[in-house]
Amino acid sequence: MTDQLLDALTRGVTTYDLARQFRVGMPQSPNHPQFWHVLPRRHGDMVRSDGGSAANDMITTGTHVGTHIDALAHVSQDGKLYGGSDAGDACLGGKYVEHGVHTIEPMIRRGVLVDVAAHRGVTTLDGGYEITLEDFRATLEAQGTEIRRGDVVLIRSGWGARFEEGQAFVGGATGVPGIGEEVGEWLAAQGIHAAGADSIAFECLRPGAGHGLLPVHRIFLVEHGIYIIEAMNLEEISAARVHEFTLVLVPLNIFGATGSPVRPLAVV
Ligand code: UVW
Image 1 (tube, rainbow, N blue to C red):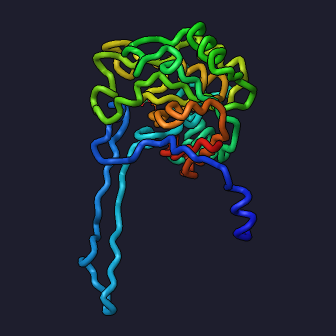
Image 2 (cartoon, helix red, strand yellow):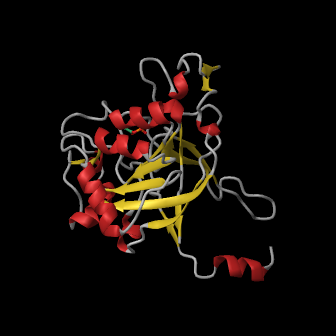
Image 3 (cartoon, rainbow, N blue to C red):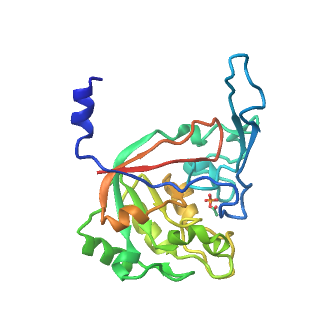
């Protein structure tokens, strides 16, 4: 690509990073193995004859920590995955050969931010608050935004601003705001491709209920084949009042995994 073409393609383009930074000790759901990062080799450990040296890393991580996407293989209902396949048969050689994260195409799609917290004029909705369809539609109307088939819909409750607070973000005792079955069914009926949120489990968690019952996960992942993106950083696009953009998201191509860390971008 020539410099002129690159310049023409990127001139006037703003890119928002919608991911949280991966860091040891970051808040995460107790449902998943934690992120761990060490440096097996640091500079000076092995110095070459010319004086150069290379450092390297090792990470271990659950695939559902930090900003991540849930593959359809992540959730089953009564032993069935999306499309009715048997969850047991879908796992061959210890890998989800069916509906694993390797089956998710890279996304370059219309993205929509539904900024419920901004519409309500609050920093964050309260822990355990279920965003109603009335809230949701009123937000869309106030923003002048419509949802179209194939969109990636990002829902901001404001809870994401608590990411740096650790356990408060996890929200076990307080609950976490988010959508419930009412909005989940409505969004599924619009034919969206994926949905994300700035909270840890995407949907509303009731106070004291932990991370167990997740009905919107069933509606999206099992009944409609809609991907879920969690723990997104939606603060910057909210502050910029960007409600429509091109969403770019590429999961890691991990054969047979149920999820993957992602670094989604909103491009306007
Ligand atoms: C949680 O971390 C609860 O969400 P998920 O399992 O969907 O990644």
